[in-house]
Image (cartoon, one colour):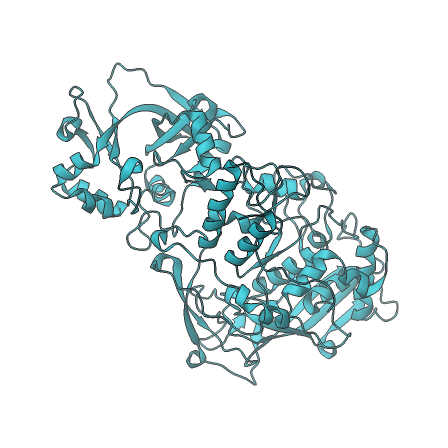
Length: 639
């Protein structure tokens, strides 16, 4: 690439995703309810219920009755409904955007792991450790984790294949499950004499610790070829035992960076998660004294530190999955420092809040919700049955560490604020609140080569055939709070003309499924004042009060809906709810393509190309990146 501009243009061409993000502003808007006292209703408080009609414009699956892949039923096989919890989650996540709420439901202890010879973050840290691997046994003692040092020796793959009577390629091709089956069949799954493998040292015995399968390419040939497995040598009875404490923080970083069930790390049949962490977790339930073989880098004494030490890393294989230095919680805290500690935000005061043990909430108090969602039941005038189902097979995967160019963005300014960046970078910030855009129609779901990442889902029909009605009950809300609730349900359009926007609900939102038209039925809704002194303000007036409160708190010039809709998060949110806009951008809303050679651990193929160019440019001292680097640029200005 000859220029930074051309580089960024190529990045946007190659990188695609079928989701986007709404900006998280640092400012948190506190509740206007103040210190809640349920024994004293607000003088201007409102109570009542809203009747809400939910119409599926594209096929819909909200699961939960028997499995998550079939529509929820209430009293019988064709009595379809939408659980109140699903509706509550949709509306709460919407109001969190509109009311500048705290980032909530963030898995703050999550550390992503990286295993990539070429990546600077991996090779740089490995260089600090000098590639000196050590071994140990991880075990529990009561509620505490311990690490006992061990010695390991390399066992040639050729020697294992010879003892088993197979070729080296047959060993490389075998999944972990198959490798352990072969070892068990040959009586090699316990403590064995290491002389059987031609190792030259003494009469020592040990346990084979293997990993796999071996991917094709450099892992089988050339200087990067995998030629050895490992054996943990049994200690001599007179050898001293060196045991170290492992803090909960250190264990969490190790545990969350390792693959789990469904990540395809074990190969083989779905659910056979041998020697990823899910496998060991299952065994620990039946055998609390189980000792787990691990490899580590650095000083094992550092494992006891309350904050994970940067110079101690532990993993389940020698090709170390290197945890990033920052957790998701670390990046979230940098993205949105708490500007209102010890107070409830606007959304928490409505929907309730259970503080963490270390929360700054007043006296650690939990707050009960003042908003309650009933089941939304199918309109009896338009019944449906399983014969109306549409069935699709779709890839269903969670976020991967290798997707970080989508989930992170650089902080404004600073020399290090270039993209792509990762969880080691001080400039890393969360991209925002993830949203799937409404697009008017559906796209063919992505199919994966691995059954472990696919689900067969049954959908109720779209096109307005699936219509549900439910009630949202509320108690003791101040008028602006009720206005926020109505705004979230109606996209601020109640009483203001036609609503062109749509909510997204249920499974396969990434492909346009679950697009919902939401209508508040004014004639069936009831609102009353707590004090009974005259009529309650109408819902449109409540929305105006909500808009005014937000603008006042944010010290924004201007008044009314136009000024409120001009706020960046609100503009971005409405753009992502606009099916006309999403339909026009449909070619951009594609599933990130997985590398065919490594389908068990998908990576963004377009990103891999950009990243390779980035690394090359960094090494030549050339500028890289531009923000935004990825994702369709949604227009957020009128017209």
